[in-house]
Length: 416
Image (tube, rainbow, N blue to C red; front, side):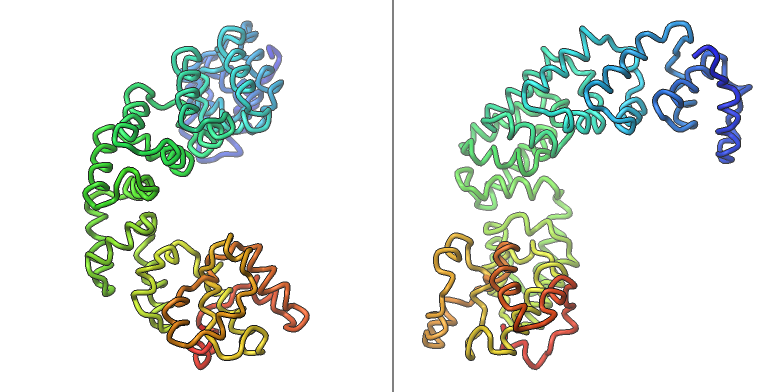
């Protein structure tokens, strides 16, 4: 390293980056210049970042054993050059870490818990602060506390990967009090587990804010023992009071009463987090285009969660084509295929008998759009792949996604 022409390298970077005219080699001390060129050459940092870091991190040319050892250690644990660049850019002080007393025990712990040499570098690159937390006082207690709800190491790893800050967050001051609050309110452990896995950030809110959300959800009539309770917390955690009131006012403007809105919230709390534009488009399509009554969305709020362009429009287009070619049914409406639960669909797929029900009974019992609830694989198997020979281009049409404007308005009411 002593023969490395750092000034020449720095000048080269300045020439390649005209925006860095405010930096000059003359304005940096020899120690800063050497640190910067080490960060550039050994860690892959861009010049501007390296110069900024060199103001607070000083590496000596004749004492590089520790930083070189840290980089070698990272590489031996599957860290790519990109991983190393991200880690050092975010937490350059790690270059001065001890291997045996600090980095190595933590790596060994994570690997023993189930992280792999591929997933661990990704986690640490996204949140290097993990390597700054005490293994004994923070990392291990946090991991096992989460495991007390999630039961398996695999679930804990899933939650941590979903929210990279979960393992470094304040265990005693935030995570433990928030989860204990749910336990004390009577929320089942299985539901708490789902909340941690689906929305880890919800439990990372400040204690007073989290307690306020729990209280608001209870006042809205969702009991802690209900599976919907944690979903409501998940939804509320992304909305403050003003955004909640704004969403209520918007839904009222679409024709629902506050009582009806509460029914929607209790059935599918997460739908309240959908944007106003998304809600407006869904209502417009089902009410104005397909001519359903508002009550249909009231009983099926999950429809707000599905993508119009990627799920709803293409499926409608497929069903319309199949119906127009008389490949599905005689004259009955194909509403049932939008909503059939997977288990029941698998058990009773050939529900041809519903097409022979009296019209009144059919409308009373099957005015549910089951087709949107079918898993992608099942829909493809039974409504696309099954008919590709009889309807050339059906797969291409589905994959492309037919815009609502391309539907035949004369057939909309007949088909759906």
